[in-house]
Length: 472
Figure 1 (spheres, rainbow, N blue to C red):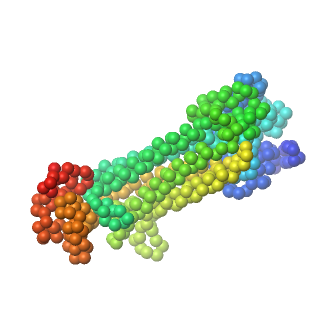
Figure 2: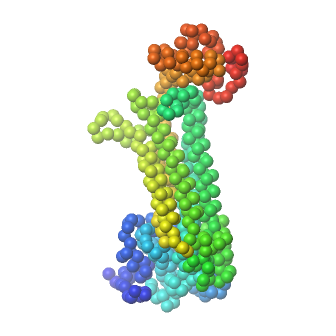
Figure 3: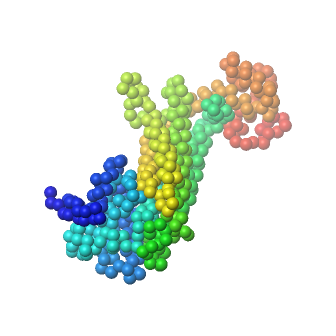
């Protein structure tokens, strides 16, 4: 293998001639082997880093701080990266010491070498265009890396919201399909009052729909970035107009409404927006897990459980029990949710660990947020396509549970009183008789009145009740 030699403050190091990264990236490869997950695993982060470098080069060019030929070469190199070129050269581990310096230098070196090639120079000939002096001009890892993280997280959230919206549509479709199927609602796993299966699925859709709004709100907090603050937020080594100008360029290239933070020193050390965003992901994970739990309960059986719905069979369920089919898709959603909830704790601990003017644990925050977003997106897509779309209702089972339930007695309380209704419920529970049979046997209500009060129209929504006990 042909090698080239590069030099940094620690001395010389040999690198493969074919690689587009440089010596600091190679040192990071040697130092950090924690997750085995390189930054290229998250294309949104690689693209966001390139966008930051592009915006910086454009701003430095506009301010006369970077020669036009260098700026144009850097901008063209960044555009190549944003198009997916050389993502495999972004090789450092997602978890690293140095507050993201290795990630930042990986980007600086790849972009510098791409730009050098455009200018007709060999990789590593940094005397013509330097990773630090030119690509990283007016920047520090401490403003470039978190700014790229803010952009990457927003870009990754867009397809998550799309997948979540599609899942919600599938739930609403089931809500409409099941609108006429009356069943028993349950509280604390005990019979409650009637509802429709359609109402149950529509409620699933509504609760997830709320989280789309919350995710959009969380993204607005990530629009305030500290680019231009350099090392600690004071803006050392940056032109007074650089921050606003670079952020305008970045907003244009990213398509995100980015603005400078009101206080760059505060923004450089504060992880509050990331913590808030992580909390929103945890909230979504909890809701998806609750939905998965309900699907597993409603489909339990098939003969000795609730069995009110049938989930699509996607694989055999047992290596020993013939014919068994398990709710594997909801189970996978549950496990995804548990991991996202655990990720939120990691983000919380990392944010708390900040000291003075910087938080050195940002790589852990970025890794967990991007990973959680990706997992939630995959879970939504899997749940929709492999489960929700194929769910079928067991109308006979729903009707049998409803007709055999004691919970319908609640609809009679305004007409026979709570005490009388409790007595009837107790008798029904111990004798196996139905509520209807007992009420008619004791002549507590006429058959006509009972038919009105126990009709779906009366039990499934608020209604006006006449003093005679008849539903208006």
